[in-house]
Image (cartoon, rainbow, N blue to C red; front, top):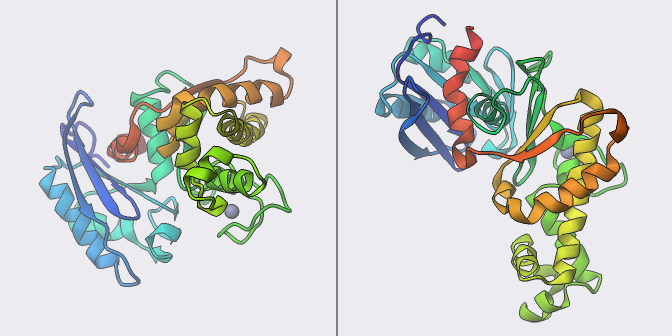
Length: 319
Ligand SMILES: [Zn+2]
């Protein structure tokens, strides 16, 4: 890891389901370059993926420091065990192959842990000792800072908050269980709550605009109507906020953070969600009179969070 320390141009790459986003950070932690490539897909995509990452690292002119974030369960020694958004690939030895190809140690971590690192070191969580990052996107990812250090757990799988079961009789989750938190509190969850409301006779004005097809109602329709003040749409947003707050209150009991940073695609609707989430969180939290209630902040880095955090991984791994 010594090559990474003191590097003046650190490259981070966030491998997503459709694209690999790269950035370069200078010595002052400024993003000085960005580049992206389509993510190679399919069962034989490991070598094309490694080639893509090498290509991006060279284009971004890394100075001996490269880190990579991946969407899935990644072990502490850089093996991607499972990645549902990469066609279910399993046991990709991505860290070892990339390190050998580039001739430097390339740390690999989950995309959500990378996002947590970006927000903790350079974003909404600067200065926090105990912070939980929750990314609300198609699913829910997470990252954990406890006692001033990123936590990865025994296997490297810490932070899979989206698969906490909040209703054992709830809808099936692709993970094989029922009623996982991300069935309710993600973009997918908002869409389900919207459809349930519409098929249950609510959201009448949206359904009329869609020609009477209640099943066609999407989360975006509810967001737009809520911004226009539609009370039934606002009620769905409130219900969504309650589901987010249920998970946050459970996480508060587990790790007692001072701060939650909320990221992912839904963070772009922060104006709409912060009120309901905060209100429900204050109602649901255990022993509110005996504690300082964790602050809720929205992520600062947006879609670059994973790549920025990945660029910070080598220095984090060798303090
Ligand atoms: Zn699940």
